[in-house]
Image 1 (cartoon, rainbow, N blue to C red):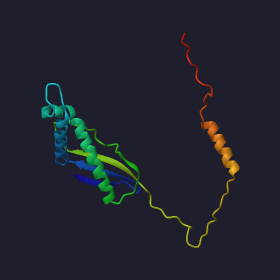
Image 2: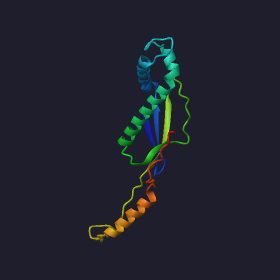
Image 3: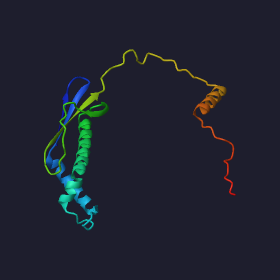
Image 4: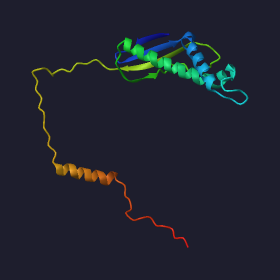
Length: 170
């Protein structure tokens, strides 16, 4: 499994993660074995469904889950190792190839993500010799009560105080 970070400019980078079949294949096989123990199909006893059927029915979803888990782990490791402070979450790159995950074919996958980085800046004009005023704001209780009353009128529900009508049985 390889990770590479390509800096486009100060604020953008591209993270490439390559997953080889050696990375995900053992995990997929383990998950398929776990799934085969719990699946019960008509005509087969519980845990005795052929592996080929399990692979055909659940293989793609298990493969996608395993690849997503590995991608998430490797992405976190790469960001931590390179000490990247990113804005938001990584998004798939525009030139990312679309994959049809087939559990019967072992292939390598390359995923590319665009990263937005925090800009480096320095605030000038604030030093130890600069003093700022701190205001102590006092809000009267009357104003708070008025705002609570207005808010309860806007957000409240009207309920009828009458008791519901009962049906008469004749």
